[in-house]
Length: 515
Image (spheres, rainbow, N blue to C red):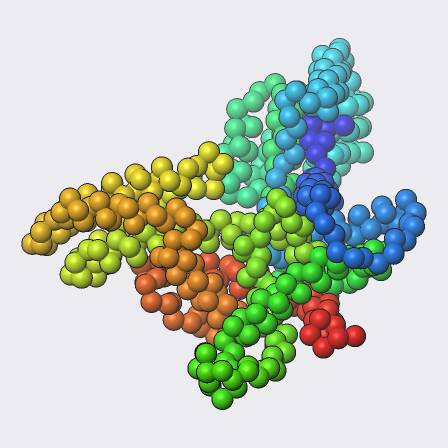
């Protein structure tokens, strides 16, 4: 038994073959899978109070089918997380201090190390437990090696030859300290640079039991490092196959739960309705007759919305989603947290853009066109909007503080450039316009919001192969933040389209053309 009883054991993570690496990865991320299962369950739980659209008749399933389905969803979520999240990292398992599991683990580990200490204190010492630990260490070190590390592999097997060690122990010739010195040296050779300090600290531990305990702790961290190395190694391979993999897993889920596209259907229907309403709103009476001319309006055929445009519109709706009251569409459920984050960034960017647009419309052109001043003012507003995502944040109070700060900055820059500072009336008007941005119905805020959404819609329509479109007028001061948001949004949407486009196409055919 060892100190590192984590689930992050990836004995095959260092192998070069992709299937071996994937197997090692699966072993390493068992704990991560649990977290992903909770995420999926929480997303499903939020839909219980929502009105579900008409669905297919229920089908009885066995417990085995449910378990298999849950496993499939978990594996799909894990693969998706690795591909979509470039910062995906496996972390060591850290049990809560007051948890029963941690208390049991601490008790068992203490009993083991106490037993080892008693054995080594006997006269002559008993090495049964120590040899078992050396065997674990040997296998762990070997698991870190790549196929080409022949010399290191032979060296480890030669020095940590358990049969030879057993014979030395029986004849009283075993030198544990010498073996520990070899192990520490080998750990220093194989560890990541970030672990050098922790490995070097092992050299200062002189007592055998604390040293073995510390070695297993560091080896546990090295296993996690190897797991993350395996993740980075298989990501390109997984990227190529993840689309088919996720689609296959979702199809398996759909076969077991035929109503798994109900919310997707409703989502796409609403997007198609949006485009139809927008088209009708632009339609003119036949012949261009003026209102009130007395001619009866002639019905104008409404063109069927383009399927691709409906999909793009549907994704934009996710940036205005009511996550507390509405269930999220099934095909984007794994990315709900990401869309929520994008939604918060969009709201933050809308407020920021509106405040800057109001401010620069008041300031003299010679001041508002100065790049350094625009950047300084933007940073000032961003700092005061930092906590916008927190429930305790009050936008009205923040905008009041922003108005005060902006007036000081504008007047100071005007004076510096030889212009007259803002008058009292101008300051009052500017503060009032900034305060008005708190309302979603504020004209300036609505303009900025509409331009941002139009820009994002244009980015989706242009495809990921083309450069980003020109930033709309009035959004120049926030063009960097807008383009970063667009890149994240487009990347997420394009990957989702790649996976689920067959389901979207089939659903839209029923919506737009009919069965």
